Each structure stands twice: as structure tokens, then as C-alpha cells.
Length: 463
Ligand code: ARG
View 1 (tube, protein in one colour):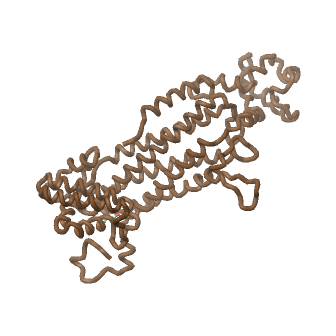
View 2 (view 1 turned 135 degrees about the vertical axis):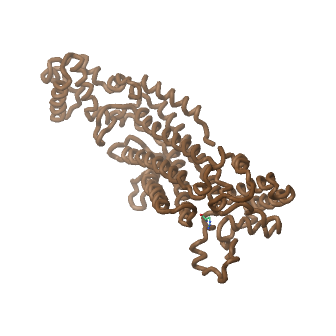
View 3 (view 1 turned 180 degrees about the vertical axis):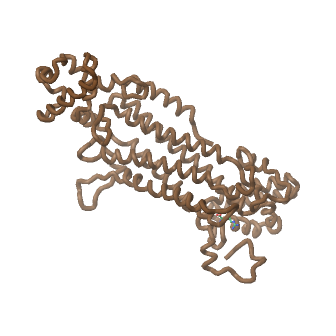
């Protein structure tokens, strides 16, 4: 047991209590951020005359040495310390003696941990944003390639109207674009520095909080010391944004799983991204998509856990807040893993164009266009809808598609049909006549693809 406190205690902490309380097994994850924060704090203390320049330099050298040794593996972050803050401070005192004892001047572990978590989270937001950007880049490439790849569009998982693969993928492009927008908003809102808030009520030392905020590249210092040490809103917002990313990935995974079935055969997942069965030799399973769909629950769970942890906490810091870490870290790692693997799977996936087109032809996806044909020849839409309904029924009985009927058969159902009906209900016409902005028609799609390309170029990395 190695702890920073003990003066007012007459008994040793019970070992089980110590273990229950300790956080080093998981907060060692932000050792770098902890030391970076301490170095900024020390620079500020010296600027304010609270430490001498000589003390500052000795402490900075000491922390840099610890950081270097941890990174090279020479120094192990030992679980005998209560938390990462105690480990760094105790190691520093051990190495440089008395000046090390001044590191914690004007600071509490409450503002320290609030800072560390923000610094760590800020880096993670940038990393996750970069991964979403890579996914968007793959989507952009596929959209450019597939503006003419016809497939059925679905509602209720029933074939509805013909669309293109570019159009279908474009829907996901919009979702992931909004996800990046949310990450950027959260980054901007959270980017204020809590350091200098002390345990809850600031400190009597003349700290320059603007200066530390600037050294750590924050937009400025936070403005209420109680809120600073007890705010976990940004984690809740982020877990909500990450849940939304997972929801999008999960919907997309679900479609890929369906498209990959023997019944659909719209896609073939690359061998490198699928797995086999130990008993059934013919199997090639979409495990990555299934795992992404499955892991979504973990991220939702983290959001609900943290909301629940926070809901009854009086101001200011309470130890409950230590629970923010493990589940948030797990969510970060889960989302990063899912994004990277999903992008790799999508990038290497083959699309079976002829199968997609055949599927679009075989499900009366041109029925709306057949009705529109009648409308364009003076039939009121409601009547046209009824006529085409009867036509579809006839086709089902005959086992034929609309375009496979003879003109005589068509005319029997409505004399309005003429030879040009075949052109009007061809898949190409059905898709390419849909030219409203956001629709699948090739010209409309090209406009959107161009806007998306500009968006990707003007929205580089966060941070
Ligand atoms: N491990 C603690 C946490 O994660 C650090 C802050 C401890 N502060 C305290 N007063 N015990 O929240």
C-alpha cells in the first residue's frame, strides 16, 4: 500500500478497502496526460513565483525522466500505488527529493483527475474522428464507383423502388458525416481547463489559470471550481455520440449480413474479413459485421451506466465519479476497434452487380414508375395505382415481371399503355429519372458526391 495521505489516521487501511478504492489498474492508462498536466502546473507555479526557477527545472527534469523511463519500459507503473497521481508524485520524490514534495502545491487530485480525463478524452475524440473520416473516404470511393450499380431499395425489408449502390451508401455517408459533426461539437464544448480548481473551492495561491489552460492548448479555463471537479457531462455527451456511431455501424452491419446471405448474394466479404465453421466446411461467416452489431450494446451500456452514476451526486467531487473511467475507456477501445475493422471489411468487399440488378428487376420495384406512366398519360394517380395493383397481381399469377408482359397483355389491363411503356419501366429509366437533389438518379448523385468530396477536403483532422 503506497498512499499520499495518512497523517490524520491512527490505523492502516484494511487491505480489501485499499484494493476496492484503488484506481491505478485502469488510470495508469493516462500516465502521459497526468505528467503533461503536472509539467504545465509546475511551469505556472514558477511563473507566479510560487516555485523558484531552479525548483521548476529540477521537477520538470524529474518528470521528464519518469515519462521517458515509463515509455521505454525501464520503469513499471506498479499497482502498489493507489492511483497514477500517487505513483508519479512518489516516484518523483524518490528520485529528486524535497523539490518533488512541492509538485502538488495549489492542486488537488480532484482537479488533477478532471484534467487528466479531459486531456485523455480530447486525444481519443481526435483518434475516433480520424477513423470515422477514413470510413467516409472509403464510402466516397465506393459511391464514385457505383453511381450506375442498380439495386432494390427497401422499406419494411420489402423491395420498394430501384436505387443505386451509390445512393444506398450515400445514406451512411450522411450518418457518419453527422457523427463527425457531433464529435467536433463535443470537442469544442469540453475544451476548457479545470486545473486550478483545487478540491472544490479554488486555492489561496495566486495561480494563473489562463496560463495553464494555454500551455495545455485549451480554449481557456473553466469558470466554476465546483463544476470543474464534478463535471462529467462531456463524457456523457461523448458516450451518446459514440452510441450513435455504433448504432450506425450496427445498422450497416445488419445490411451486410443480409446482403451476404446465400439468398441475397449482393456482396462477398473478403476472405481476410470472414471466418469459417469448425464443422460445416461450406461456411463463410460475416463475423466482423456480427461482432460490430453485438458490441453496440457495450457502448450503450457505458452511456446508461454513467448517466446513472451521475444522477444522484451532490456537488462537488464524489468517489462514485471514479467509475467514469473503466467504462469510458472500454467504449473508446470498442468504438475504435469496430471502426477500423468495419472500414477494412468494407474496403475489401466485392459487390455482385448483376445479382443486385436482377434482384431489383424481380420485385416490381418499377410499379410506381408504371403508375406514373399512366398519370403522365392523363390517368388520375389514384386510378393508376389501382390499375397497376391489378397488373402486379396478374404478373404474380403469370410469374412474370411487368416488362416481360406483351403489349396486348398490358393493353388488356389498360388501353393507355403503348410501346414506350417498356422504356418507362426499365430499371435505368426508373433510377435516372429521379433527379431531385438527394435522389438516386446519376446526375443528382454526382452533384452530392461532389459536395461530399468538398466536405471531406474542408473537414480534415480534429484538434
Ligand atoms: N481516482 C480518483 C478518480 O478517478 C481520483 C480523484 C481522487 N480524489 C479523492 N479525493 N479521492 O476519481
